[in-house]
Length: 259
Image (tube, rainbow, N blue to C red; front, top):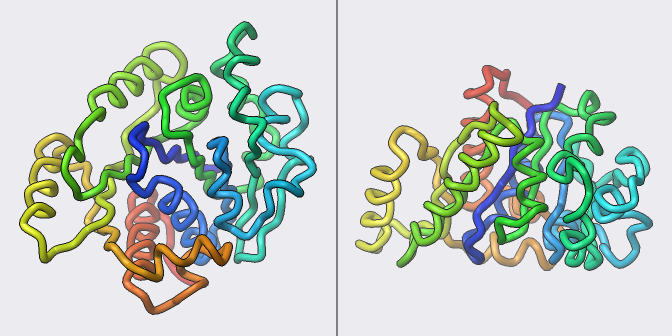
């Protein structure tokens, strides 16, 4: 049965989608059957793995609102062991349509229950908000991974995110765990970076990944080519960082690492 990881931070511009796409691709690279679920209405994770969201027959909107079966929505990507549940612009209005439904926080969990056994990992790219769609993602997740950028105000809003996590644990998913915090946009030459690292480690003791994601041109370019960075440039620092992160996740789960 798949391990479900929600990649979430309501603060925009922290590398959330980049992280979701590249963790999913890296786990697939290590021969783990992986499903990437895009529940961000912007659909950047969808285009980031080379899928044209405008041409998708069904999207996660149809899963959440119309009850279309997940197996009818899954799209194969061009990358090793990586499938996708794509997003679309319709998802922007989904929260209003879901608000009056009974057990509305469990819709995503129920929707993917029929395909969980097909995967080793499911990675969910959450929207940059703490609304009903993110609540759905956290309700069906085993753990949450929080990307934090190494810049001013890095910890801004994180107390709100952790309050949401605690609320979800109380109300809909008592098993939700913090998998770890990932430092992104890392530049070791800057004093500010080390200050942020120290702050984050104080805020999340023993929960910060050893792998850090550097700033990098190749990492920024890859999405415009519809490719995870490990397929766009196998030797760049971003690729090595995300492969290292995947290895950390696999080790936490006691999984064998190897191509």
